[in-house]
Length: 350
Image (tube, rainbow, N blue to C red):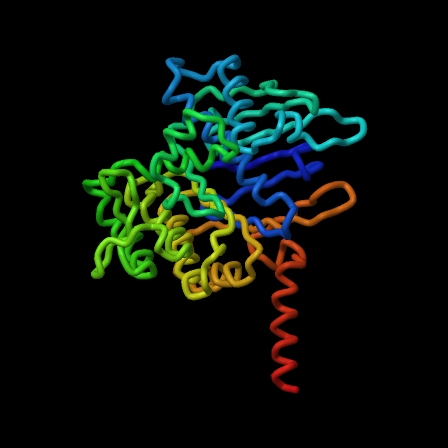
């Protein structure tokens, strides 16, 4: 698992030191406070190691290989005009410094890049081992409808889509997991399939469908909220989200109604309990409260959870963290939801 991330001058962050829980990590903040940036920097470092392990002939990481592939992955995931655009401009400091600490110290890495850098990183601490688990990134947009031919088009042309889409599509198209893990897969899939009203199927022409008693329904005709659940269920069915690994989910609540958000919250905790280190970014009070209700009910006693509140300041975004949402400071977006409830009740009473 990832234990710690230390940041100096990354996009909106001047300085931050995040210590993660081994199971679930919830990042909360208003728009523009860097929630997605945190998910992407964590994902990019994990993905480049996992990809290099599969593509490279090197048994162990080398500095020359890492410098090239890490810079390329960061640019492809964030899509800046140059790598240096990810460094926060600050008088007297012209570099972005990042340090990642894992429970297995052989994966630890530290690197930096300058504000004027186009595509170069400097490795200060080189990992001694490759990471053998591929991380999963779920963006705010569902990908099942664009899946047909997307990978071949992406790899053969220059497209302004972030590379997380291509990476996730590769995982969506993987073969279904069979064998002794099928029972656990079924347990994780049942609540998702009940919420969708069917199962996700991939035909020989590379198109996804929702299959139920009415037949096969093509993905563009399925509600977008159900498509998002469909991505999660497909990744569970292929074994990409099972037992071990990493899940980064940007705004799980987007385009979902409260009833389905409740099911998503339970699925997030089920995955966390199964050994997946989960990172979600949200500004939904409903999702946040649902997670805390489930955690306080005692069904997930072994799930270690950390909450991170992102707050704007004169010197960039400040991170506050704790084991519950009450410890991360006031988030305006959440307070506004509570205030609206109070206003509604007052209007009804009037």
